[in-house]
Structures are given as structure tokens and as C-alpha cells.
Image (tube, rainbow, N blue to C red):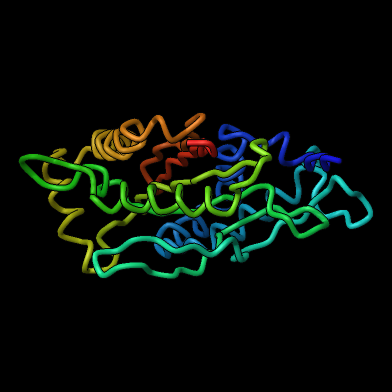
Length: 242
């Protein structure tokens, strides 16, 4: 007998995840949002998203008396794996930023959270290019998700959520990143709209290059207020049978 999927597993898609990530951050004051952008902490954003998932009635999460409810968990163990490296086989423990599990502790939904600055999408002054780590991390998360959800039930779902951020005062970001910001800031002639667009376009170009790995890609964005930082939330649903 095939077990029925959780309500959340059936309902969630890339558009809804991106929208929930948007709500999770924008419901807070501008001061809190700025601190969130400055911290650039994946665990904090995962916690905010988990709260948002739990508060959406249509997902029916958190009710232990309901077999179709499911539970949201952070930093949950997935399926470990062995992969090839230049030095040979390497054993890796697999965990996921945010999961939704059924009462049998089976993972049905995975959401991996990643953070990049806008300048990471268009690094450099003369020949801007996306940071190489964006593609590397995407491929790593795709692999991890497929390892854990590798079974006969293709209706389980895995998402990668990229939070692309620029604080209101990027001059206060860690000094190791500051030169990259300044190069892009100069190249875009200190125009916030151009700076944001080039960064977002660069990140999106990496996702589009890997388009065959995804079922869908959705974007939800905050405004570009003169007195606030901004975020673009990009959610991609991983094609599990890729």
C-alpha cells in the first residue's frame, strides 16, 4: 500500500516557497531586516521560514493527531553518501537545512537555504562574472537532495532557496567581501537599481545554465527603498529524476 503524501508536500511549489521566504523577512521592522541582512545567517533565515510554514493553515503542519500534517525540522539528517574526489572515495554525512517529515520520520520535502550578496552575481570591474561558488553549491545541494529523496516516490519535493542580499549600508559588511562590493558599486556608477539588476541577473544566469536540473524557478523580491537594504528570494524546485 502506497502511503498518501502530506498536504504540505502536495501544495508546496517554488512560487509558494519564495513567497513564504519573502513574508518571513518583510513582516519584521526595517531595523530587524537590516540586522538580518548584515548577519547573512542561513540558520536564522531557515528558522524564520519554518515559522512561516507552520503558520500557513493550508499546509496543515504541526498537528500530531493528523496523519497528513507533518512536522517542520531544521538541520535534519538525510541519507549519507560516498562521492568521488581527486584523492579517491569520500564518505559524507548528509543533513538538510529545513525538512518536512511525515509521522514515520520520512523526509518528504527538503529546502536548502543559500545566501549570496548581489555583487556575487557580477564580480569584477571590466568583465563581470558570477562567483564560481554559486554553481558549485547549487550542484552540491542538488546532489544531496537527490540522495535523500532517491526512491520510487517521485512526488516528494526538494527546493533550493537562494537569498540574494544587499544591506542598506554595505560598507559595514565583513572586510573580506568589501573590495568585491566596491568594484561592482563603481562599475554600476553607484546606482542601486543597476547594482541590484546586474547582481540578480548574474545569479539567475547560473540557475538558467542548470535549467535542466529544475522543474521550476520562481523569484520574489523586496522593494528598493532608499533607506533600506533589499533581498531577492530565488527558489528552484529540483528535478528528482534528473
